[in-house]
Image (cartoon, rainbow over all chains, first blue to last red):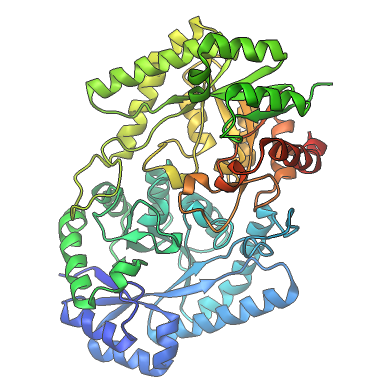
Length: 288
Length: 288
């Protein structure tokens, strides 16, 4: 039987790709989700070989995206970087390229001016993201790669992703075939959504669930909200229920643990993997 | 012509109710939004008299709610406190009682235990909130008060409000008459919502917009996310666009500035009022 738990390498941030692969293999996992920084560090061909030699699946590559720029140079740079990410995904043998689409373009941080004059038109930024996805889909298809839209928690709407809900991602995806554009269900980002049950079911019906990522919403928020994630079970998310919905929707792929958290990063990777497996066995696996 | 800008007393936190009323009046405002703590401090009858003598409208009373308890004692206490808030709203001469409905009941903070066993069933918590609203509506109607559901930003879904979107609040409100249950459009909480334009229009069609509250989403987040609000124009929110939507939806009532922010609280109230008016005149009033 397939063991579906996958280590996203962001969870063991201080491990090189080689260490993460060895750690996952040693822990009995069959898959890893890779981040591009660690792939670049190892070298693309070498990274692909390391994973292949270990006999692991690559559940996804994180990440493409940041497509909301309004200026020609910004648009060209984003398209070029995403084509590179698509080629990397192909070389690594994964079908799923996770896309964090980007925030408001000209509001990259807090302004000290009384009235910042950055571009705050979120409706237009979303339209540009859709257009860029359309421009990348053909290239991705040629490389056997699916663009996987990730809705990010609305806490990140200003600076990181103007796609905030699963329904919104499905609306963007609807223009394309399911094997071209998918969505990821990341519990941390979507657990609060009143339409979550319906939208997971819809994503399943439409054949678009490309990844299920799990980590918990903990409080108080970390000083850097990006790092405010916890192990499954340490926070407020109802994993049995959401896992049940994802299962009912027909998803049978890998389940990645992706945690950004300083304290977990400072924990030995082996221990993190042990905790991951315990929590998965207790709060996720029984509901698959 | 009515001047629609209203000072919510949370914005000038260090002012007593009497000081806030005097400050608002001196600044040429015609309305104040009151918090119950400052009303209690002044005494209900006295507070009502102070506002009446100043000739100001009370745009809303903040707040009732916290209705998500699952235990009989918690439910009874919540209903009792909300009936008190309803009587206070009537005494103060406002029709609009803002309701922050409460978060997950048994997850009141971070747990040091490995696997907290609190109640994480957000679907059930939402159902209880709807039931409690139903139990309060008759009492509110008898007192000429409308229960105004406030969707809170999903950052607060765990600990403060299981209603996160305007659409969700409208769905809860749909069981009741528009004069019984309304909604508030608070830019800070809803600006990111991909369905915002549609849901503001729907709220208008259904006659449920009871209040329009304005403040900005600023970054980085404050250590206490609750206090991470800025003056209109200091952050990422597109006030002209949202104000246009609210206007098109037919809202003609007061527009409250409600800001929780330590730096603004430490600023003399007169200066805060000056900034409020400048920003309102620049980014809101032209779009009404």
